[in-house]
Image (cartoon, rainbow, N blue to C red; front, side):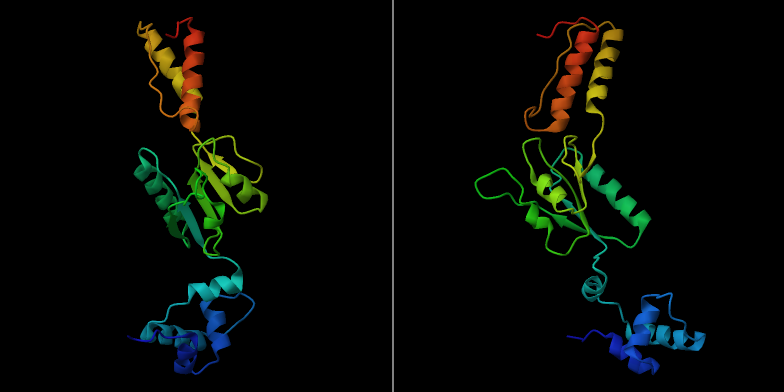
Length: 214
């Protein structure tokens, strides 16, 4: 197995110190080097096929530049994930790690410590109305975005369409077409925020037009 080149190998090839190579690779603005020195270092990097060790860099900076995407088990999840990946690609300098979101044994609760293994700068995931992993993540200040849920604790952001208004407008649209017997087909309403808000919007829309709910 070929040994991967190190920063010391580049320094030896360019005839400079490893510290100089580190400054050039990390583009440290408070250091100035001759153009010829930078050219020699870049040539050494190219010839050796050197790539900075991300684990070492994360230890030095305290950042991994990696976003976790976890436990997104919802309909059209590929659309959600694709849009997130496109945005991360647009922002640049970020990698993605996928987490399954293992549950605490004997419960339906996601173990929040799954996201705290020093490989992530933040996590995007969805949890039900009954799950509370986000409370712990918010309390310790770990950057967290919860999807499909609005009732999130302090320190946690949420990304959630307005399901209430969408359902209410759907009822208004059907009523405008002359329909009066309008049904609501429910998913797991007690557990999932989107289903709960759709039901509330449906009920409000029916009340708006004095339509009876059977």
